[in-house]
Amino acid sequence: MKKIKAILENFDTEYVEDYKKIWIKAKLQSSDALLAVAKAVQDEGLRSLSTVSPTDFPDRETIELNYFFEDLQTKRNLWLKCDIPRELEKCEIASLTPLFPGAEWHEREAYSMFGVKFLNHPDLRPIIVSEDFIGKTPFRRDFDWEQHEEDVAKNVQAIVDAFKDEQATNEVNLDPESSETVLNWGPTHPASGPIRLRVHCDGEEIISIDPDIGYVWRALESLVTKKDFVGAIVAVERLCFMDNINSMVGYCMAVEEIAGTEITEFAKWMRVILGEVARISSHFMGLGGFFMNLGLHTLFMWNLGTREFFLDFLESYSGARIATASIEPGGVRYGLDMTMFDELQKALDQFDNTVDDIEMIFVNNPTMKVRAKDVGVLSADEVEDYALCGIVARASGVKTDIRIDEPYAAYDQVDMDYVTRSNGAAADRFKVLFGELKQSVDIIKQAKKRIEEGVASGEFNPTKDHMVKVPKKLPAGEALSRVEWARGEVLMHLVTEEKAKSPYRLKLKAPSFNHTMMLNKLLEGQTLSDIPLVFGSLYVCQGDLDR
Image (cartoon, rainbow, N blue to C red; front, side, top):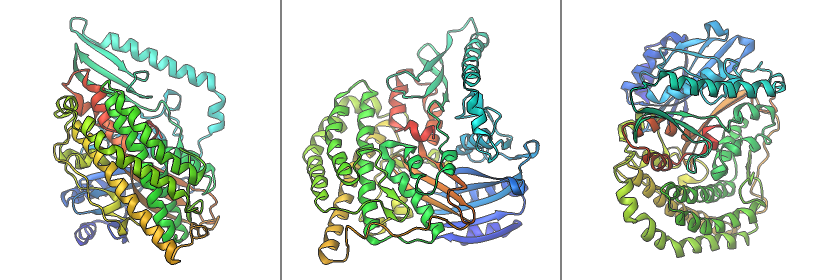
């Protein structure tokens, strides 16, 4: 951390301060220095740019840009800020994409939502937003959502016309003497979900892939600003319902930091249990989806059977199997009836009874080994350069896991290690996913035992210790929180005003964004049959992709 501070001393800054154990926070006097600072910290080992988070301040006539640099090897991170003019004609800054390839889509998102122009960006096209939002900066504070929504028919027509123009352009631009064509993979392909891949191909060979995302864009980052701090949970958990609990944990951590609230030890352990149950629920879907993309549906249905037992526990605790809303600022929403652990134990027993069969039949499946062992390979260097995370990073041998690197809840008391492989192929990602299922079950057993012992000794009162009071109005401030979601790092940047009743700004950085960005790199030169296999192995959730 001293070396990072020493680098920053060479530039004009408003402040440089220790923010958290593995984070330094600094603000530049001028945005002109951004490129030089970014190059200096990259040379020091901070090779990953997690995301870019603009905050609109109309009263100050500025857009504040927040950059989050990470060193996945030594766990040293930098939160770097700078201001740029808010006026659209002057709202520009140097692009970091030439230095940090993983910044490409994040800068395109900031351009689409806030109108920030990134100079020397290689492909500054709008992203996520549909044609009717292009050029309208929907995340600026003065955007008129009601007016926009009044023009429904006009907006739909703009989307239709844009698609027709695109198809016509394809026909004009393609060489009539060649066999090149453009295929739309999705959004109705059985493996695609609501995503469209524009696939340029020559026969079966893929020339390039251009992902078209945003088909289920819900503007969650704007929606949360229209709700109070508890009501915002409804939007935050919709980041992805396959693991909605851990996203709620991340948001609540940011609120609690600004409020100066410390949750109880019991609530910390409950967050571990609920978070790992959600991770298991998601991982079962991921394993099944991997094989479904290969055309084999058996594992998907088999997994759903065991997954139901874990959902039974969530239902017994929260009354809901999926949209649980079980985490809120101050702890966990409900007290615990210890008989609910009977449902949890049934799930653990069911897993223990089936895990060997799943490993024998599916993980060691010879077809999977042959089909996926050399496809979709990502190197450790690519993981760092493109800020990849979760199973995608760990399958390439990169030891990164927020639960270990920057523990939250009660993970600092959990016995766990990184689940990794070294080859970085589609098969390796599948095997890491399976290994993490077993790891999550082990973590749940540890947390369950800790709570049972705490209740037996009188240390925990499970019906009262679940929640501490958090003020309804928060002071002005900002916080950064990170959690290890089922798919990897979820980073949240929360900004509040004085006596705030709702978030002023909430940035949601989720892993599927970066992972989908890799499709062209992974599939160029491969065949069309490789698309569903590689796409499935990246463990993409449309909800976090189109947040």
